[in-house]
Image (cartoon, rainbow, N blue to C red):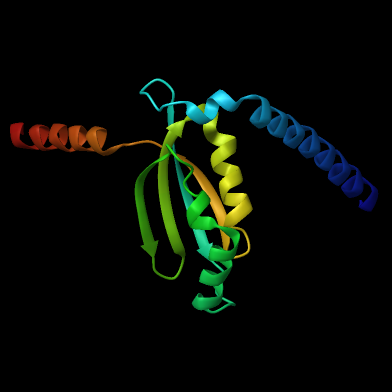
Amino acid sequence: MQKSLKTLLASTLLITSAFCGAVNAQSTTNSPAKNAVATPDNAVMLTVFLKHDQSRPLGELKAQLAKQGFYKAFPPAGVEVVSWNIMMGIGQVVTVRFPASRLAEVNLALENTAWGSYKTEFYPTYDFKAIAQAEQNKAQQTQTAQ
């Protein structure tokens, strides 16, 4: 059991190292991505949970964020903030929109400046409001017709 776990961990580390190397190589050679503009055919939205480290006081967390340059680096220039909310008891929930080619840049901005103050979770996101409203209208029309 231990040997298979070690093998699994070793192969995961190898794959992760290869992937991170490819991402780092791509981000250094793919500088036009930083100038990319979000359009309907290339934009992605990403919701990020910035979960507070509740074992430390808020002042300490803010000082660490300032030291690491969080608000200077995130969001990177040209990345649209769709929403930025406080979720009491959790932390902050930020939804950003940007060209898919800038995903690594957005990720690195968070890894380099938010980690330590926050634990992060990432969720691909899309705008469902118009679809939900259309479904509600359809349901109401069906109910009225009956």
